[in-house]
Length: 573
View 1: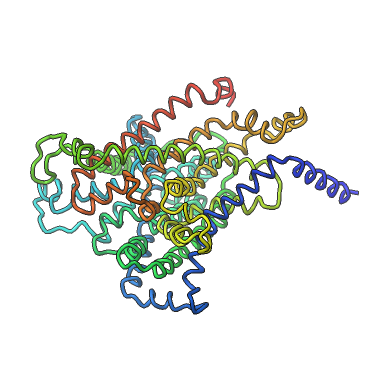
View 2: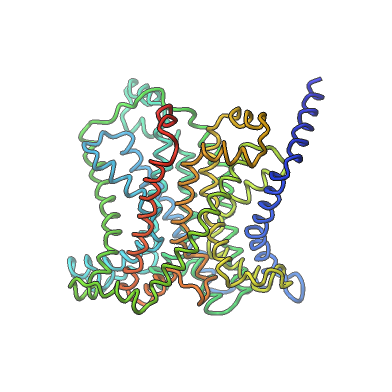
């Protein structure tokens, strides 16, 4: 009887699903988009690296693996990745622990932590590399003028490792802060009542509870580190990583097949780590901590603990802040390292000599086109994943999240190999290559996972009965989504919109391979001038870009405050 009812219910759901043409069309278009612009470029990379005119061969892999510089690049990438993953996770844990467990004397520290956690999100990915060179390079303020060191070398492993750690540890801090907040204080207090020291409680109770989350933070930092292109390109010097080696292989050696094979190797590493992080550690960490803490935690007030930890975190946070502040000053000094008279000549040259207006206009317009499409696509995917049942749901969720594991350089090579000669080298869609449309698509694909994750979290909090009542009144899926669901997740949608804009306008790793002389993009210009050592111009471009991104975030906050979720709903929460 139960089986017959289940079968009847499933048949009714199928009939209802296929009776909604808007829903079916949306799913078909979405699958086509994801397959064409995420799966196809990756598939063509793999095919091109093993298929030649002579048929199936591993000769391309054998050739690139025989290159000493490529083998060294793999070793360098893994060394940096593991170092950055471990240090970012540990520093993130320290900041999160101080925030949640230690009694901070002033709100200043809490605001400082929040600012440091926000900075990497809204800043270009290579800002800290510029700062590192200007502070600790041969003409650096600290090394040359304060310490009188003239033979130092900031480039290489330590330069990349320090810059990436400062860039990625705030992400770990935000991840671990949530986990520590949800630990029930009674578990730790029970251990304290039994005579355990604070260190013993931390190692025997707190640490085991957050270990999966700590592993998750390590893997996220590791993936971000090995996929990073901008920082190794600027501060790496002769210390090549996989991302920079792939770029040089296609732009310097003009070896598209070799670059494709190298990209497959980098993709394989990131995919393995992503699968471990997504499908093993993420589930384990959410299963470890359930619900909210039963009561407020008694914060540590012992001065022997609070003072050293607070001082250490404050110094590190202020150092990171100083690194970001350094960039605007780099644009205001006449000649960095030699002449510190204030001047606006670099800002004037940006617009008068280096087509700055075109660079900002092109970057702004392309990002402005990409961001609403990304936000809407993210919400549609989230809606389908959370609220609908159909066979392709798993495919849509997995492929949309897959873009998170694909390094920008790999995606750029995939688009070159996949669209320069048309689909499967047939000439179909060849006109897409080299256009602004492909840059917009690249922006969308790179930002899609972030918006989708935010949308899924927001939609899981909405009661199913609200939408079902709209269906019962005769509304179709499009009407329900636009008039019921979307207004309820308006804050998440607006947040996704601005996040997509910021990620698009600060992107470099994929678009540097796809941009043509027809388009000037800010990040590409910054990278070009930084490589030439023209730090004044690079800092001027970067400063204006930071102002644009911060302005966007500020406008979003104002917009959400006045046009987001109603005050009544917020008060109920």
